[in-house]
Image (cartoon, rainbow, N blue to C red; front, side):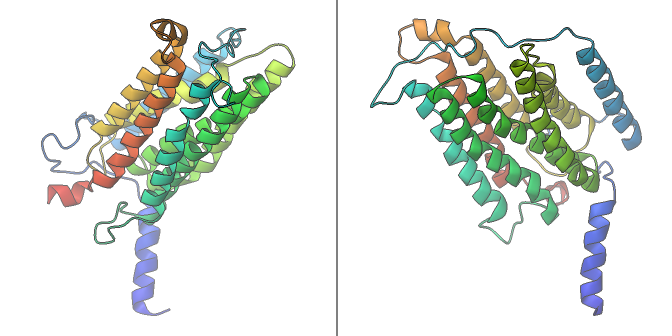
Length: 299
């Protein structure tokens, strides 16, 4: 191996093994989320671990959370051009557009002079997020065509891909590159297992959503904690908070499905949920195209 090739290999290995340390000289307003807490990197990881252990124990001691009996009874069940539940089915189309755009952005970036990622390995969780969003279009449309528990599995599986890959991406960028990359596979398996566990519990007449709800909601909480506790490698961290806010709005629309539909029988809350969730993911991929590394922006 020649000296140049050895140097490249050495640098790549170094980038995959070293932890991140708080960057100095972050411009004012550079990241509106990260707080400069007088705490070591190791101490921040311990705080995150303790909170996670407490959350897991709290969920484990909760009583079983069954899925509501009327979960599949959506407000808007109108048929159009032969498609049942037309708006709830067709409103998944934005997920396909956003997912494909995300795949193009992460795997085939246009501007080679300004790399989207400091280390090429960082692209993989973002690409899996884009794939999950793309598959959500098909899984959710399939479910809403004729809603039942068996079809709901295919709606929820790609959603867990999105939640877990986003968590792994933030772990790679803010905590430790190699640890986040190694955690990607187990996190994806945990997401899939949460759906399988819920469906198995439903098949045995004792539906339990605890693990699935933790995968969805605690993952988002964990992402916000990572944004708050750990310094950024890239700018525009506040865009992730904006995306989280849009997802919260989507869940509010979901809860208000029938009241929103009853306002004028124009559109239901669940249809608006799909649109708001797609906008949240669009905001994330927009962030990837606009952000810059801390070192470049600070220089």
